[in-house]
Length: 611
Image (cartoon, rainbow, N blue to C red):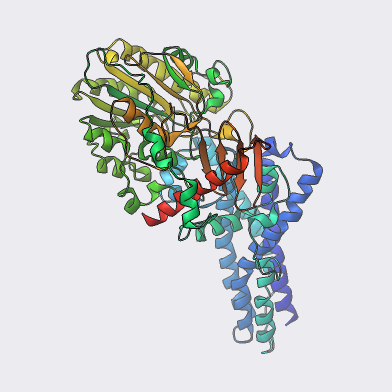
């Protein structure tokens, strides 16, 4: 009995130590942010994080606990062999997930959660985020961690039950009691409320709190709570929520001056360029690092720059949903494009343009089936869909994600003569996506900045050719990003800067040049464009006219949402219950705007659940 009890205790400690080891790795691989923590904060990441580590260890010890109950029927050595293989498999899986956790954090700004699920089902796309050397290093580190952890396990356990006879029957009730007692570390005590993310929050610094998370606990919690079956933010009753949003569905139909003028009175052509991971923090004209986007900066002199334009989410699927579907990102690792049955309930911008008589096309350098992109395009009537499959292999494999931007732009220029007038052509670039393996000299040491520099160079060449073409004088070109980026300048993932992305309208039909400083977001694009083309957009609670008097932007993350208006800016974390103000904490409009933002987010999720 003593051996069995000792094995159980040691096994629990083994997994606890394993997760502490991975916290050390996480802090090491994110050393740039770790050095910003004080010694006190660093110690607290382990103290507060131990609650999740103990909970994760409790979960993994449960099955061995049940098996050890049987040692009075089966030789302990046989039970130990089963536990040995169970542990080895878990080491492989957990080491892979743990390595993904620290590897993805710099780009995603969040610990491992259900966002990774779509990538796990598309391993090629996931591998595309890494160079061959990064991929090899990742696999070697995973293998090294598995080997080291398994070596410790063998040293500690392999001789434990050697030649041990069956245990006394009394071991069964004792082990049942001990296995049942795992509920205490799993729940982190006997409190009514079980362990949750707010249980490990201790600092105003987001990175400090994130460092206290346990990747296994975080991933499985997100996985189990991935499906939205109820509204995660029920701030008000239904009537109060709707009253707080009264009249919002008319804001996208506001009458504003028209800034587009066709030289021959015909319908205006539209080319929409979506640049991957295009952050305002690398755009000189928007206060970003100078010299990275000289072509875009120069284009700003010939159009309308929206200087306060924000993405509603932090991933590509959320960006496409907002820009082309007029549907914002959602709290948790969820987006509209992950649900084919819900996609069918939304009328996307290309469908509206098709109804107005526009010929539609979509050019993308990567796999167009990813995140159901081809599905919503086909549903919208976009029959001309160009992707990596439509290029020679030497071009489609030149970058990990597919066709470099310069060749994608060339293909669009080649296809324009075959388009009927008017046309609505969308182009979605890939070159500024990690691993930033662009066919371009290294102008900047930072790989993201170098990738954006190449994307800007390609954009500049395309615009020169377009200006020299007969299409320019009657065409509107819209340039924006699918989302911001966590690369380059350092800021937290809750900061508005992480969602600030450029938006520029230029082309021969733009009859004025100015900077629109109205605070607006991706869902506002469609209705504003339709209104500027002389038509009436459909009412929506999720959008407004970018040139109108109503100004605000909302961005959503896994654990909360940010709100920006001229009067106040804040981030509300619904997991911890904390609200962080960027400005306007003492503004008299603070409370009313707080109610508005809560109602917006509540209504959004209620709408999503009903679709």
